[in-house]
Image (cartoon, rainbow, N blue to C red; front, side, top):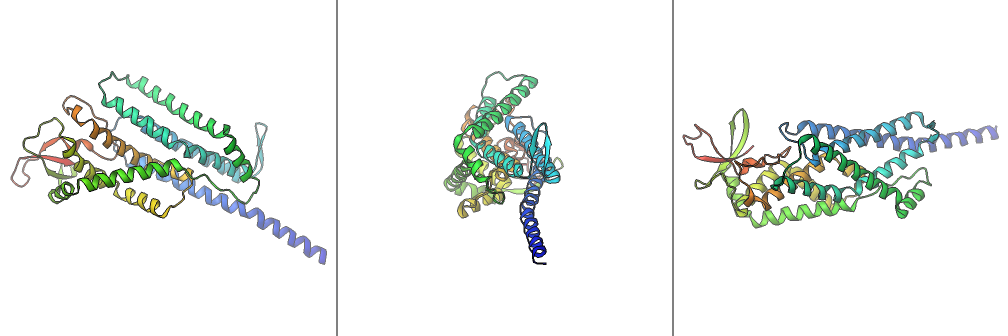
Length: 337
C-alpha cells in the first residue's frame, strides 16, 4: 500500500508539472490570437482610398508573421511531441519560437522607422517615381531583406544565443525580450508632441474653440475658420503646427495617453506584443505629419499628390473648402475629416 501510494503521488506530481507549461501555452495562444484580431480590426478600420507605402506593406508582413506564429504554436500545443522533416518538435519549441520572434520584433523598430522616413522623403521630393508594379516589388524586396537581416542578427549574436540556451534549460520559465528600441521611440515621440503642444498652446486653444461639427458630402467633419488671404499654397510652419496637433491628437489621443502611462509606470511589455499594427500606424501618422511640417514650403496642393494617411486626413488641415448654406456664409473653411 505504501509503494502504491508513493507511485500515485509521483504520478500526480508529474501530471501537475506537465500542466504548468500547458497552461502557459494556452495563455500565450490567447494573447497572440487577441493580437491578430486587433491587427485585423485595425486594417479593417483604415481608410480605403490610400495608396500603398512601405509601412502599409510592412504591416501586412507583420500580420502574416503573427499568424504564422499562432499556427506553429497551435500545432505544437495540439500534438505536443512530433517529428516533421526529420526535426522533433516538443512544447519546448513553443517558448523557443516565441523568444526568437520577441528578439526579432524588438530589433525591428529603428529599421522600420528609418526606412519609412526615407520612403516619405522620396514621396515628397520631385524625383521620378517608379511604376506601381516596380514600386510594389521594391517594397517587397526591402521588407524581405529587413526580416532576414534582423533574424540573422538575432540567431547569430552570441549573447542572444546564450540567453536563449540558458532560459530554455528550465521548462517552466519562459521570459521574453523587452525592446529598448520601442521604449526610446515612444519616449521621443511623446516628448516631441509635448513640446509642440506647449509651444502652440494658445493657437491650439483658439482653434479648438472655433471648431464645430457638421455634415458635408455625407461625412461628419470638424472645421475651423480659414484665413481669407490664404491660397492653395501651404501656410507657414507656425500656422500649420496647431492644426497638425489637433488632427493628430483628435485621432490618436487615447493611444498617446496609453504611451504616457506605459512610460510613467515603466510597464514592461514583451516585444512580441508591443510590435503590432496599431503601434505602426501611430508611428506612421507621426512620420507623415513631421514630413508635411518640414516640407510645407515645397508643397503646392494643386500640383502634387500627397501621401494619404490611413487614419488622419492631413490634407484637410490646409485645403480651403467652401461649404454652402453653413451659417449663411460661403467663407473658405479648413476642415478636418
